[in-house]
Length: 261
Image (cartoon, rainbow, N blue to C red; front, top):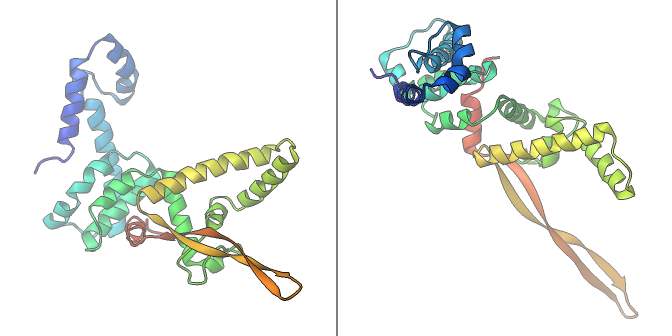
């Protein structure tokens, strides 16, 4: 059976061997010495990390299975995922890769693209998506709620609360000080920086299809003006209300990569 990472190894090995000059030796020398490797095999450094990462993922996967062995058909099903798993060195994300491998052999609802989606998430994003999912599905666990009565939709305000429970307060104070042209406090400036980070995460997980946005037209409030003869209604301006929701793809993905408690 062909190693699914062979093509990557060959490219790295060929690239390094062709450029194995003094600058490359200076660049990689300390690392290879620390790991007990040599530059004679230009791909040895890459192979070391790939092997180490896969070993850790498979160790965590074995914990998921609680001693239950795999058969050849199980290995065939997870082969497309091994390249992505082998490149992940973060322990928290390795847990999610192990969960995805287990979900792949135990469920028919796992899509091949789940591996590509997981490979594009940082540990912070994966943790945040899980926290947001838990909050939306257990709204009684938090005092602060921005959920639609149907329960499926939620506001960006809830996303802020899950990201940092004090973030909305900092932002409100920021707008007040900005209006009065007063300098920001350190906490408020940190809040602004956190909000920028949240916007990046929100855009990224929406790009990956984990969450979606539903836009709803909200009619404005009418005003009534009394005249000499009767009352005249002046319609208010309509606005757009954006609501977030987990897509069916996102729901299945989150369940597939959820680590064991």
